[in-house]
Image (cartoon, rainbow, N blue to C red; front, side):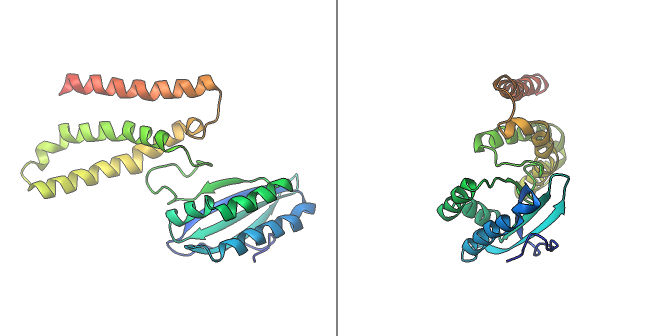
Length: 216
């Protein structure tokens, strides 16, 4: 078990990292270390778990702890986060006053989401943002790049076209949109704000549709 006063080590190469942020007083250090020990002990036999490391930083209020859980893949991490074993431990810890903020480190969602997101958004929100990024990417590819790819064989043209679309969508548009709509993705803000964000996304899709109808 790595205790909270140890220095953080570098994640294993290729590991998927889930980071837990916790702030408490210096007097809470022992209780926090015991909670982390229980979580790590439970995770030891979990498929895909590679290890855990905890570090601490002094703050004006006490101490800020950062725990990095390493898994062999995103799938293994999500299975652990959603497991009954972890849920039961979390309920027990929360009764003792434990609370935390979790974040996924790049390549958490690889090219799809900004690493600044602190919670996993609902799937429908992710899909809606991906659609908002993918639709103009595909249409622009059809309008601009298709004539250049036409001399190539169909398999080659499809491969190159998909590579361009994925690059535009995953590396640029979706991360940008996820930062712009971060509060909406995380379910924060007033009901009016969330409704406005949804209306803006749907309006943008409608506007793009009308624009491409005119251009095509």
